[in-house]
Length: 108
Image 1 (cartoon, rainbow, N blue to C red):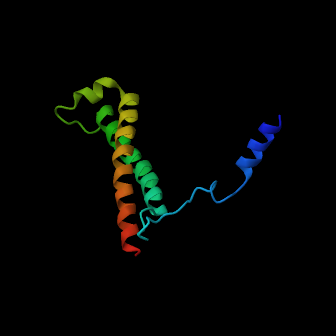
Image 2: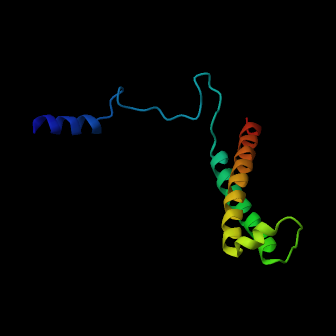
Image 3: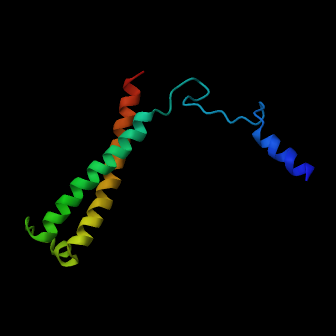
């Protein structure tokens, strides 16, 4: 029982060996993370997902008839919207994170 209490106190103890350093800089002092990367990825993912889901819906519903994209119309509107959102959010998240990196580099 005593051993368990000592382990719990040791976990709560903030000694030099127990601290995990949280930093946004590498050992040379260069910035390698900024919150704009995270914000850009989330905003890009949501915006890209909504835009591509809307475009996929327009193709599936037949408002924009494009030769060769009958597979989208055959799958139905729900599947087109879902896969459009998935593809758009992946591409938008990647573009948004790259934008965040550019913003971070320009703030130096």
